[in-house]
Structure formats: C-alpha cells, structure tokens
Length: 398
Ligand code: ADP
Image (cartoon, rainbow, N blue to C red; front, side, top):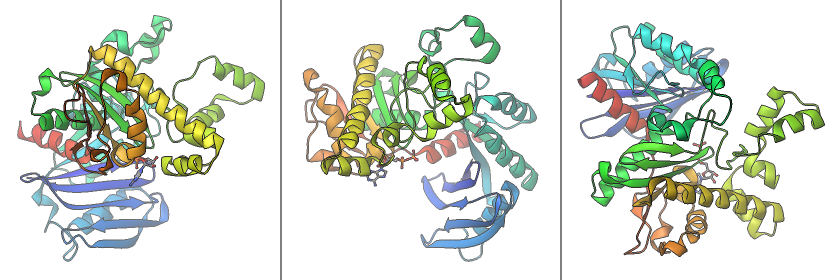
C-alpha cells in the first residue's frame, strides 16, 4: 500500500510518499515560497537523485499540482498514476478537544478543524487548504488528518488546566494542549520496542529538542503531561521562543515599553530563547561555539537551555513515579552529544550515567547510557511522516 503524507504550511508544502509494505520512502520533497510566482520544488524520486524545479505556485492548489506532476513524472516519478496511492495523510497542527484521535476526513471533520482553527491561526488554515485542494484534485482518494495535539489528549485535567477562572476554559478553551504529539508518540513507541518491553508497561520521558522544543511524560504509552501549553510558547527555552515566564511580565512590558499584544507575541516567539539571550543565534551549534570562544551571553543561554530541560526531566520523574527511559530526539537531541552530556550530568545522583563513546552517535537509534544504568538513555531519530503514514494506513484499513 502506498500512502502520501502532506504537511501544508503557510509558504511551503512538504511531502513524502511511502511504500508501507516495507516502510520505504519512494519519493519526497518540498515546495518552497508557495504564494509567490517564483516557487521552488525540490523533489527526490526513487533513484535518490535530487531535482530542482522552478514552478509557479501562487497558491497551494498550484503547488500541489506540481507535486503530483513530479510524483507521476516519467523520469523522476514514483508512480504511473495517482490511482496507485491508497490514501493521503495530512499533518494538522491543532485538533483542540474535538479530536481525540486521528481521523478520516469527512465534511464534518473539515468543519471540526475549521472550528478549532482560531487556536492555531498560523497553521490550521493552511493544513485545511491542503485537505480541500486534495479533495478537489483527487475526489475519490481517502484522506486522513493526524493532529499534533492528539497524543496529549490523554493528559488528566490536573495537568492540562491553568489556574485561571474556570470560565476561561469553558468560554475560550484555555487549557494546555501540547504539540509535537506525533513525534513524542513515535519515539516513545520505538523506545519501548528497542528496550524489548510492552509499551503499556513503561514510563518514558521524551525530549524533542529541535528549534521548537518540548518534553513529554509518557506513562504506559499515553501522554500524561507535556511542556508546551495552550500554544507552543510554554515550557522549555527554544531557538527563538521564550518558554516559561512569569505571566505578569507581559502586562508590565506592555506598559513600560508601550507595545501591543501582537508585537509582544512576536518578540516572545521570534526574538527570544537562545537568540534573545545570546544576541548571536537561535542555533545551538553557534551558541556552543560562541560559548567556547568566551561569549558570556552565549554561555548563559546554553546554561539556561540545559537547566530548563533538567528541571522538567526532574518534574516528570515525579509525575511518572520514576522512569524506564529518557529519549532524545529532533535536531539537537539526535545530533548534539555535548548537550545530551550536559543534561544527563544532572542525573548522576540517580546513578544514571551516559557512556561517552556511545554518546557520540548522531542521527541513529542508539542507547547511550552505561550498562546497568537504572534509567536507559536513548537517542531515537523522530519520524513524524512515518507515524502519519501508519495512522493513515490503519484508518483506511479498518
Ligand atoms: P526544527 O524544529 O525547525 O525542525 P531541527 O529539528 O532541525 O529544527 O533542530 C534545530 C536545532 O537542532 C538547532 O539548534 C541545531 O543546532 C540542532 N541541529 C540540527 N541538525 C544538527 C546537526 N546535524 N548537528 C548538530 N546539531 C544539529
């Protein structure tokens, strides 16, 4: 069975075509600068050779048409016709409380995604456009929506509620939703499989450390808490996001600096985090280099970044009543051994240590804790596309 996975963003369309029998990627690519008349399609077909095509993609419709052209291209394509593809799985950022699981797309589901789109106004409308355009271009093709929030819908109320007047929850849906759910779910499952234990009997802390970063506490395969909240701004310090702060700082700054909510939102999302503190970069590699070269603010940013992660690991050890494994994934988690080492140094009091040699791994599934460590530490590359493809396959096979 072949499944196409689509991630429609505001100005990009990412795609991967899977052969599900052996979980092989037949083709993948991205359309960049959607919405302009000089869009670029980067495509990789079964030969592995990369193709760059200048296309006109003033909207997602034109962009998706170009993707279909490449997928069915006589030279670079992976299928003779789109009929060979059994279904399309879409990444949808926000499912609100409406969606407790991945679902096949119907008119009712489209209305449901629309109804929660105000919770993710920068993402959901584009995800939805992708779904509508596919329905128009391939009316008989089953489509599924796989939400970033769904995995965290198992959080208990005491974890997802904010201590605000209750009616804000009822009137506006103000609560913690959490994000990166597809990634946390994927690596938690892989961790259980790699440890040779039933997922239903494990306590796993998953650390997704990319440009956006979040940690989840996963008990018996279910998320019971996560660091991101009502939006992806809460929790860890990120590349450009501030993460946790005293909420009173916001009205204080609005008064002192005379800035409005939109501007402050932009500062907290795009100019804070590693970039804001260091004044150098949002990329951990640059920050580490600058810290080594003696920049005190880069060192401070690094120390804050690591400390926040340690604090949340500590909190989730309590939430889970201990842990069987801690997993590192995404850009920094998969590749930056120095960061993993700094974070795990905080676990020495539990007799948990990482093996320096094993910790050199980059981008591959590997246990990096020492033999006999009471908590296993793993590096597991995330694969959100494969998870979306699997969920879609399960839905169309039901
Ligand atoms: P995004 O959340 O945008 O997908 P990534 O998952 O690529 O971002 O993560 C970005 C972070 O991961 C950066 O801080 C960067 O330093 C780190 N990173 C990404 N790739 C590598 C790599 N190959 N080696 C070292 N660090 C990396």
